[in-house]
Length: 81
Image (cartoon, rainbow, N blue to C red; front, side, top):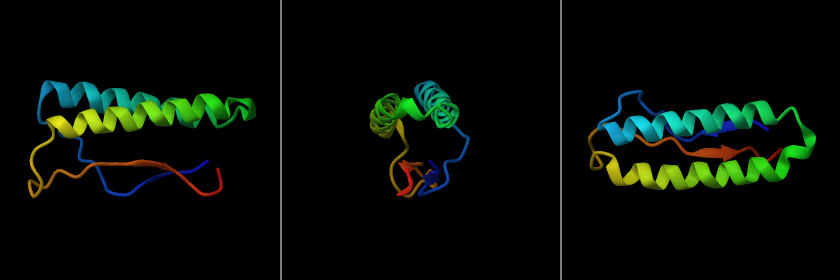
């Protein structure tokens, strides 16, 4: 599986909540990369992607309004996964 980001996410949290959410999403991304080596982990990876999407939605509540230059990264599995 290859992880693709549709937009670059700056490493500049706008609030303490953003910092926590960015860190949590990063940890999930690391887990997804590590679990890719275990063929039987597909169901767990699907759950982690779901949690990542939920964190991304929560993060959206704390982000600066559109046009502030802060873009959101979206984790998407490639078509080959």
